View 1 (cartoon, rainbow, N blue to C red):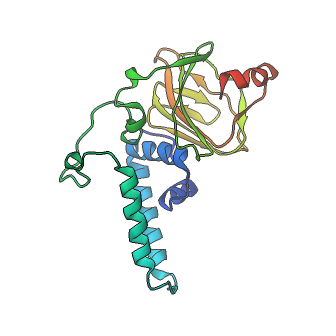
View 2 (view 1 turned 90 degrees about the vertical axis):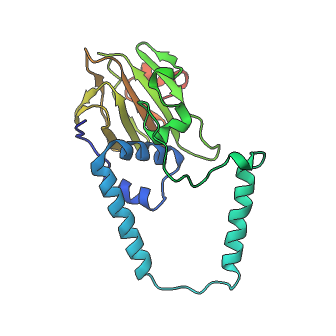
Length: 229
């Protein structure tokens, strides 16, 4: 799988620093799982962050700060595993289990391993959607789109940061061709109109948005509350 479109350097730095919310963390991690180039870049960003921490000036803390931290971690673990049979919990397996499927591993906890098992809701002619439920405090949205081959998405811009990761199929816009594994890392200054390639089946993509899409056409804007994109 040859990838053409990758994450922006600033996005990789924010990901390594833990500065992205859940929606964008999931989509970035899913792309990294499919892209050796961004895997390496992410590792480099994490190493750089570690070097900066080592070079940072030490700051005095309270004597019981470590005890408070460990207590907070212990309380969180108790909350996470409340009601779980401890004998069946193995937090540190000797070998990571290989999970088969065509869904990137970071996304499998939301969808399962197979794209074919996803339940879709039709939101417009040729376009279906599957919403992914995140923590209630996450401000951004994460969802899947299933767009029929040959279908054009109405021309639009973005109210903030938006990322689109292709899982299967392909589309073309003014930035080129986006196939499986490619990611469009866009901001509020970008307008485009993706058109799904004919002959290759539907384009299934994972989308993270900071704010709702800004459609240019008046009909699309009127239908946006129904479409939910």
